[in-house]
Length: 503
Image (cartoon, rainbow, N blue to C red; front, side, top):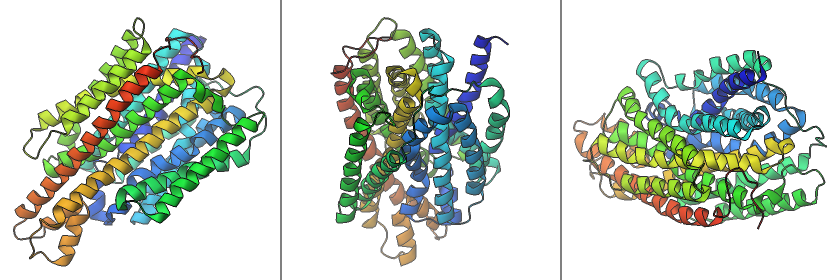
């Protein structure tokens, strides 16, 4: 087998963990109503179940990327495959909300091992610029498409099995990776790795997790002393981490990369667009199931156009960038995504499913235009021996953005939902029923089914949820409009294939 054929077969292998790692950010979206009915989590517990996976990935990616540069990216990938498969089994058979949160956290640790290794291996397997960009486009399609495919796969499985089955699909894929990975994937590492700085690893984790916790708590319960101190503490630790990296002869990540126009702007655009998209995906599938009343399988089918939008966006961006400045392509893609969010923000309880999903497809088309160019700029800015650490920074931005997006947009929507439903529910409802209905839309649907006439509660809950859904969509549209302007200006001097200049 020649090297070129082996590289493309190896890419097919690398697409699998990238796909699953991103799918696990969203695979529970369809299962949320069934999971809520079975385990009865509180609103806060449900959000932790959804986003603790992304939080742990975000906190550990830089460490794992740097570790892969030192011990070997293929070795780390295979270790991550074993951990990811084992954690998937634990999550599938969790019997309490606390158990599921813990299992999702372990999945996050495994995902943090998988994600940077795949992209770093692509950098070493495809030294040619054109082949590398094509490979990154395919990888990007899998990674970004995984967020959209997750609800579809979840919906299909829920038609036949219980909610835990959405995790068990990881197991055979991880076993396949363990079997064929050593055959098709070359080992790749920094030839002069230096020592692994444990203190830097601890600082990177201690910088991310308190900020995530604080943002989540402030979004859910307004600004308080403890969350504000957590954010402040995380920021202070982040400063210590940066200063340590600047002093070390062999840093975990070269902080000076952030001075590059291409690296910094691409990282920012990728982070913000994933933040908005992941948070909206969490809400959209609840809208389809609980407001519109679609079965999981039908809701999954309605998500298919969103994948097509992503793929078409990736293809268009890859073609345009040969003759058009990356700044214009990335800026236009971000603006299109913002327009999609604005269209989603105009839906109502009487809107047709076609109208809602058409708006959502505009959104995914825009994100597809941004993702491959952002990732290519991030990966090619760093020297080859630090590919794992650079890829990890990019992945950290994406995973952090996805987790924060679910937390912030989810909690904004929840806050609006609670505010509207609290005063609108019939006064004659039993206190325990009213409490369940004001917690989550899934809780309202569950308790409404126990009432002689569920229609009033369902109508009130549906209206309240749509108000929260559209408020979150308009917030995301505003955010991405600002990002589109900033990223266009910052990337203006960057040409595709050139090393971006520091500023």
